[in-house]
Length: 201
Image 1: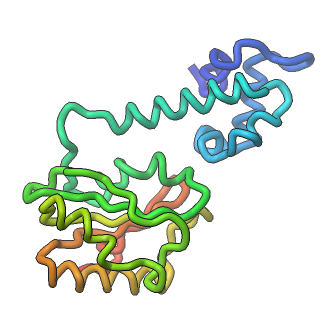
Image 2 (image 1 turned 45 degrees about the vertical axis):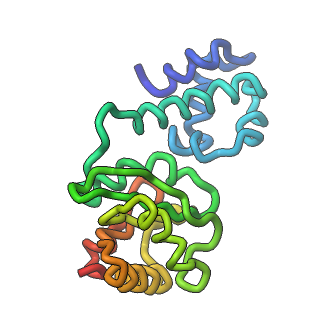
C-alpha cells in the first residue's frame, strides 16, 4: 500500500470533491511526505481542510507508535558505526523544532546503557556546560559516549561552534577516561559524523 492509502485508513472519509486517498495525497504533498507530517504541529495539521482534531490525533498517534516501534528491541543495541547511532535518534530528532542535545551512554562493548537528553535550545560551546554532558556517563559508569544534536533547519552541516564543542568534549573525556566516540549532527533525512569529518581522532 502507498503512504496515501495507509493514511486513508486512518482518515476513513474524504471531503466533498476529494476522496479519502486524495486527501491523504494532499496532506503528504502539503507537508513534504511522512517526515513532514512528523514535524508539523498538531494545530497546523488540524487546520487542514478535512482533518480536524480527531483525525490529526490519529495521524500523530500512528507516527508516535512507529517511532516507538523503531526504538523497541529485546536486546540492547550495539553502536559499531555512526549509522548505528543515527538510526537510534534520527527518526525523532529530525522532527524537532528546536535544538536538542542527547548523549548515548555505552558500556565497554559499546552496548547502549541509556540515552539522555542534556540540552534543549541553543547548542553551542558557549551555552553547553561540559560537565552536564558527562554527568550521567559518570553516574552510570559508562566507558564511552556518542553525542548528538539536531539542526532544525534540516541542514546538518557543522558550524564552527559545533566543531569547537566537539573538541572541548573530547578533551574533557580524556580527563574523565570516557571516550567520545562521535558527535552526530542530525538534519532532515541525513546526518553528519564529526568523527568521519576528522574532528575526532
